[in-house]
Length: 215
Image 1: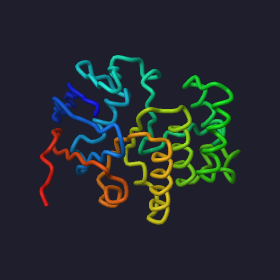
Image 2: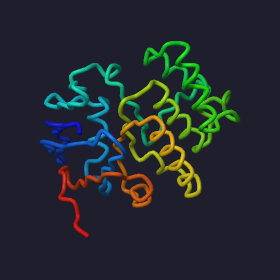
Image 3: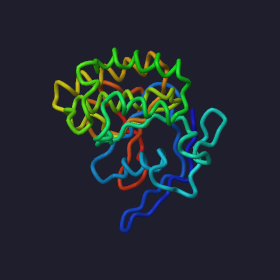
Image 4: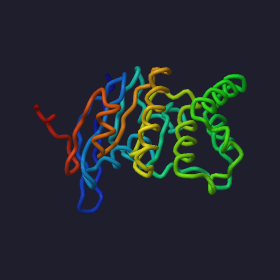
């Protein structure tokens, strides 16, 4: 288990206040809550997109929050995917490998594996601005995985896809995570995400963790 403490930040009238949270270091932990509950704030603070001065995240003997973002070995998939529009699918993925400092031979191996697993050949030379939603999602997953992350952070990664694409995307992502043994925190409000992917569940409401519902 990894231990997160000091996940506390105010946003005007809204306050995220999670003094302590534990995340499994295996499988997928789903952070579940309605819109406005604080899910995406948790994601942004853990990923380093926003600062959180009191935050600690102890994982594998390191405090990830004390490290520069590039040294945290996190793979991140944003809800809006954040694909560089002027780069091709290939360039988006290779850029991520370069930023992560991956050795050339490893980079080529991972890129080839992800290109095949995610069926990216048809859009490999397509610029980000011209990729479909499903293609952007697959490129975003490849970009998150190419740098050998030790933990994945996923913010509603299927919400902009239509239902058939969501089902396929869940299956592909689940298969890749299991093959590589990468734990993940999946932020979602979709019960289908939980049913398909959750090994562990956390519930959030009004900026605070809630007791797990009893069946």
